[in-house]
Length: 340
Image (tube, rainbow, N blue to C red; front, top):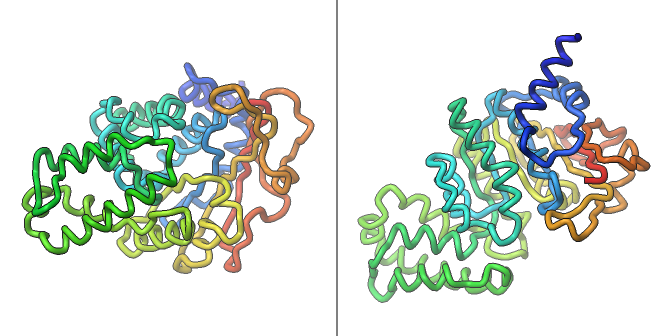
């Protein structure tokens, strides 16, 4: 039997036993994966539809191979507080903290198909995988961290315990309302911090820098969201935090020419390149199994087999540029999901 075929089969079994992945074409992945330039200045960006079946298992398969090449920082479309909670899990394996992230939205699938195997792999291999957030904060995540950090503390006229409890009690589904409320809360905390910095330092100690990242997070609303995504990643680059980095974001942030990844590609220093993995879907179910989803028609034209009627996930090279950068520093591997 061909040795390469044996290796691919073993990898397939190691990654997918016990998961819901259906008919993953590993051969197509490894053929294209070998052609990509994965070095310290190559950023990998994965574009997903957040709640579609088998998205997260496929992402883990891609990331597992990237971890083996030294990639260990994952920028995820979460806030700073959520990313910190994910890192708690990655360090301790305590899954109870996951409920303080996007658990009511799509975290059950994300935990089962991505986080849990990532934790297990990280523990076994010592990769030191770490998450970093670049999106807006969520009340439940901020409330959880504040409750741990502040306890019964009060700083001048701010009762931090009441503030934490109020954040924890907010309805996760009222996202836009929450953003407005949270922005006002953060504005108050910014003033309080400026006026009482020594008191915050005394209480927060090693958590001070994360606290500042949370309250001064520039992503506070849907308006100018992509612009602020770019700002946060460029700030990370200035601080030397973009080497061997993976970015996971929604497909519209990756594919629309005036959004996050195309703009970032043009603004990064010249030494950087980006390899993108856009997920394109044809006739796939959402995580609840009650609604069908396909990618926008403008992107379905890139699929190599639009009439495929059986379950399949394969990797292809687009015949034309799917993301246009004026610096020509973006290469693409399409992830085609059929009938999942």
